[in-house]
Each structure stands twice: as C-alpha cells, then as structure tokens.
Length: 309
Image (cartoon, rainbow, N blue to C red):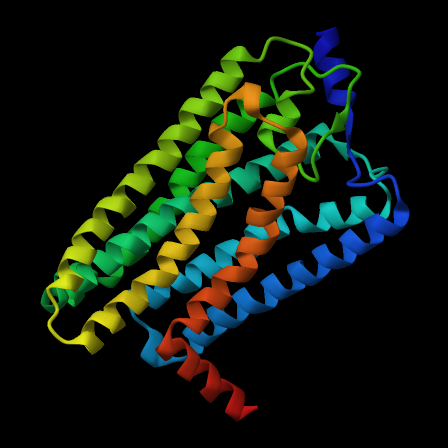
C-alpha cells in the first residue's frame, strides 16, 4: 500500500534535448512549425474531402479519417513537448497525466497502423476487382472498418497502459524522452520489468506484423494486376494511387518497428528519441504532402477550393 501511495505521488519530468537554452529554443521553434504545418495540412485534406462531393469515395473517406487521426495523434504529444522545451524540462507531469498521454498515443497510433492496412485492402479491391468495387466497398463496410480500426487501437492501448502503470516508480523520475513513451517509462520502474517488456514486444510484434503482412499480400496482388494492364497510362495511374500509400506505410512501420521491436541490448534512449521525432512530428507533415502531390483528383479539388477564396 505504501508503494502504491508513493507511486501515485510521483511526478515525471522530461530530459531536455540540450542543456543550452538557446538550442532548446531552436528545437521549440522547429517543433512548433512542424506541429502547425501538420495541423494545417491534415485539416486541409479532411475539409477538402468533406466539401468536395467528387471525393466522396471509399479511398478518400479513409484518407480523410487518416488525416483526422494524425491531427489527434500529434496533438497528444506536441503541446506537452513544446511546454517542456521552453521550461528546460522543468514542467512536471503527474503519473495520471503520463498514463493518459500514453493511452491516447498508443490508441491513435495503433488505429493508424490498422487503418493503413484497410487502405491497402481498398486499393487491392479497386485495382484487382474494379467492376465489383462499389459493390464490395459499400459505405456500411467502410464505416465498419474505420470503427474496427479505432476499436483495435483501444483494445491494444488500454491493457498495455494499465500493465505499465501498475509498476512501482521510486526516486528516478526523469524520462529520457519528450513524451511518455512505453520503453522510456518502463526504464524508470523500480521493479523487474521482464514480463512487461515481453508483453510489450509480443503485442507490438502482432500489431505491426499482421497489418504489414496484409499490406504486403495486397500489394503482391496489386502489382501483379497492374503489370497485366496493357496501356502505359493505365499502369502509371494505378501505380500513382498506390505509391503514396507505400511511402507512408514504410515511414510509419519502419520507425515504429525500430522503437518497439529492437532488442533491449541495442536500444539507445537518444536514438529512440530521435526516431520518435520522425513519426510524431515529421510523418504527420509528410502524409498530406505525399498524398496531395501524387494525387491528381486531390490536387484539382484543392485548386478549385483555393480559387473560391
């Protein structure tokens, strides 16, 4: 009981990127610019898809939902990280606040990974079964798959967060990170975390490997179908609708796998923090850029919307 009471009173602090306040300010400005760019870019995609009836198709429905997920995903990290950059890591976060941030980060990140697999399935049906596409990808199925992504993200996040925050935390309360990431928080526990690390590894492996396997299988069939298309223009159009999704998948799964599937012996807190910057700040910026630059319909819709203003 005494250990539980001590843990409940614990406040965490985040280690600054640099002891130099000037460097911290530069990083703060960079993070703020990336955060605002991510918000505006993803909000633009969500709004453009919503107001443009020509984009009311399953592919753009999933793309708009991905953009909304990215907004909440980044917003679960950025505000606290920005405050801590200005305060040189002196802004405390309670154990409840840390747990809440971890829950929403894993929930939204897990849903994001599952949604990328759903988007691959959508492209598989569109390219391999074009005549049956509207029949297979009904709006009810699209909504069910979107809700399913959120439910799976929730079912992944809740038990992991509860498992980690049942650990006792003692004197060391400086998190070597800029948010409450699972490996970084577990390093502060004053108890054996072998079971918790094993559980995190197994769940991370399942959550990353199953969607990635489905994406890979989908693209094997997609590439086979594209190579059968006789016209060069048709092949180019099919590849252009898929290439942006492939780039986003490689970024998201590559960075996440590095953090959660690396052996403990090779895990570096500093490298983990740097890689985390990629998928918490940079990837959410790249998503709207990649999809808008490589998608003619989206670019045309954006131009029409800008002309109205």
